[in-house]
Amino acid sequence: MTISQRITALPPAPDPAVHARTEFAQVAAASVLAQRGLPVELNAFATQANDTAADVNARATAAEQASQSAEAAKIAALAAAGAQPWVSGTTYAKNSVAISQVNFQPYRRQVAGAGTVDPANDTAGQWMPQFGTGSFTPRAAASATFDLSTTNFFTRAMSASETWVFANCPTNGFSFGIELTYTGGTLTLPSTVKTVNNVVYSFVAGKTYLLLFVTTNKGATRWRMVATDPYDN
Image (cartoon, rainbow, N blue to C red; front, top):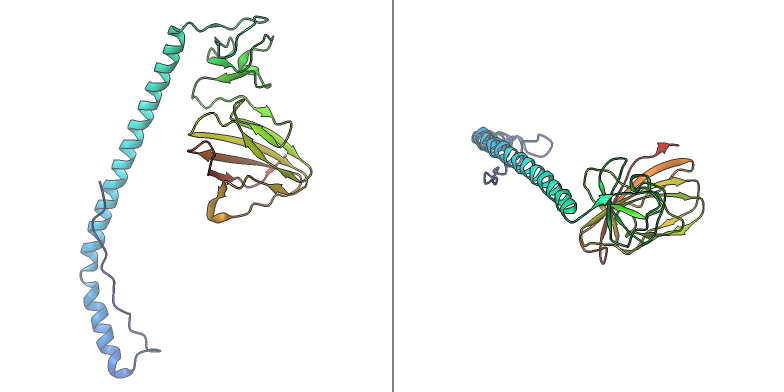
């Protein structure tokens, strides 16, 4: 559905500060006459806008249902591929999949090794969740370089000036968040980061911010960024 109705531009409104007495009535008459067709145009525009909104909502609902179906299919495929329940102390090969015994969701091993922490509780970047329910494994960033192959949500405490680097983006379409606890310093972002209206964010010491980054080309030329207002710590 598209909006094809166009609103006809109106002539200048009469203005006693601009128009002489001899032309004021003529300008006023032209303005009133031009407005006679305006209700018809506005009503048609409103009808088309409402129809378009309904179409967008229907498409969004269908997309959400398709996403849920795809997620269910992915989990079923993982199970069919032989994903087994996670067992404490077992050595897992890189890229192997195990089922958490905390939330019973699948996780993929990022590095080979064993451990005693269930994948759902992993904060060391050993496991990557393989489901799209909104769950994530937060990872404390030890430096200003964020390894995007390890998680899609980081925490970072900043007390001095830093230059951030986003490394190892795993897919063309990717998003991740950073919970920034700020106490001081100047933040320099990658040159590929674009903000709304090119705003330059400033931070207040003693506050926490959530930063969201989205790319469609592995961050090669563009990261879209938004930041929240400050939270009290």
